[in-house]
Length: 142
Image 1 (cartoon, rainbow, N blue to C red):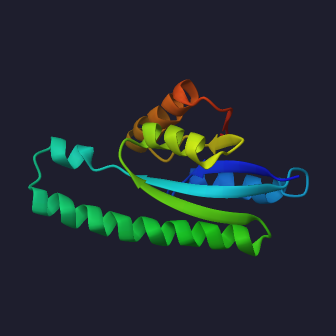
Image 2: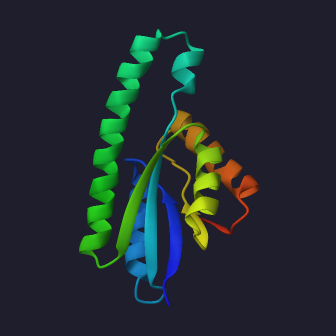
């Protein structure tokens, strides 16, 4: 029997580590994976960008995120792991928790991004909020 897992990703080393872990564990614990990226534009609006600028940056971000999701999905599929993907807009921690409940997954696998102070603060805080707020088990992979 396969477990369903939600995996929030980006284009970081941390996300790559999670995918490699899933591939390594596929024989011991078969999984079907839903990859997820959340596009957050609230910081742009907060810093006073004009609406037309926010829309342009958002469109570019979405196009980039779709490519990242497809790259990760293909990597899993090539390794024999069934995967699909979703892209959401909003607050990352909140959207991850909502998607976990909506998608009917068994648990969430997330990794704090340790690539630098700023990204660690941003993604690390997302991982912490998901651990605290998600009503499903959360597996934190460092």
